[in-house]
Image (cartoon, rainbow, N blue to C red; front, side, top):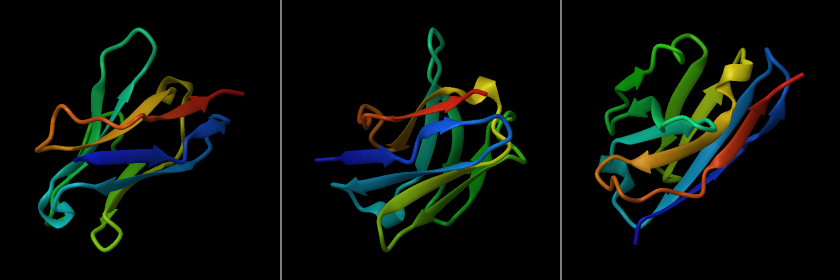
Length: 114
């Protein structure tokens, strides 16, 4: 059973930083491409960044230069470091194992506000 548990969200001022974590179980993590998505109120869920088992990364345009995705295969975890946060980054952030597209965690709320 695929399980994804996101954490690390919170309230941060514009320009601040957060590091999100996603702990996983129920699949072979080392082989699995992983991704972070986000969903703002009233908007569709969108891809933020992805990372393959070979550590190849991709980023949405809004994330380039500010966000960094990484993974720890020993811990079966994926991370999203976010710097220079903006109010428009406010959203619920989710991780996903890309071979299990119907499986989502509960997400973690990120709020960027002064």
